[in-house]
View 1: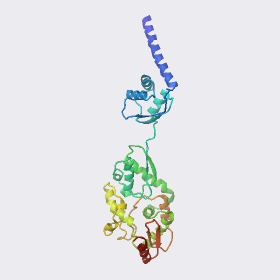
View 2: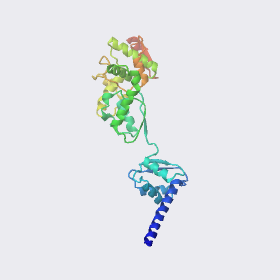
View 3: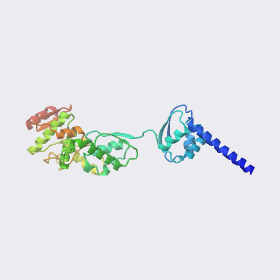
View 4: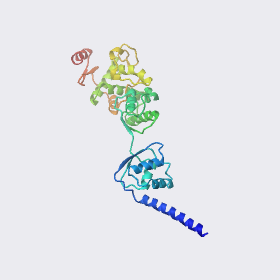
Length: 324
């Protein structure tokens, strides 16, 4: 009986000692010489993590680290990722950091400029490693062209293409609700179409309003809009539907002028059937408030200056002077 008591006491003392050592490590920080960046790989074992922590000078005792992770119930909870380990961190805080996944942000930031079409958006996302080429286009986005809000976005790695498409689409609805809130669906679509054209045609807010006025004047008079930007988009649209990229700026307008398309505004009168890009708030506002004028023509010089004219003869003179 005495032997058992001594054995029990010895075991109890050993356990108490280990717990005491662990408690000290919890309360007292390890003396990490410098802050460290540390990466936990996906599927990495606890022993491997502990071994590398010691090699990097972040912990002094692998056994105690593993022991504490286990008794705290977090030995299977460590999240893969990159972590910034501060100086003098305790075992408790280190285990908690790893188990809660409080690592360095690894979000991917993607800027989608105003006037981007769905092909451009697909390319921005794939160029930045968010998606593979064609994955965004595969989400039936062509039918919703013009309704993906141009903005700066942060994406968590491995976000699905569907989630990304819905996020951009929902952002458009939220951001434009104040401007378009009182309009019918048909009226909204018309404004977005005009705004999408403005994004591709001119730069300044004042020019956008003037061009919006020219578009209205030509539509009222039954004149074809005769816009290169719509022709270029019409050439690229079938390619987008096949989930491939097409650069509208590389499209030969001359080669496509005689090709019948719903977007060929040289051959067809009236407004095009859908947007050709995602407009920003500035262009939408300009489409809502076109500048009244007697202009029916405009052109942009090679220096980026937009010039307006009232008659075809004036327009031809400007073309000869600035574009020949």
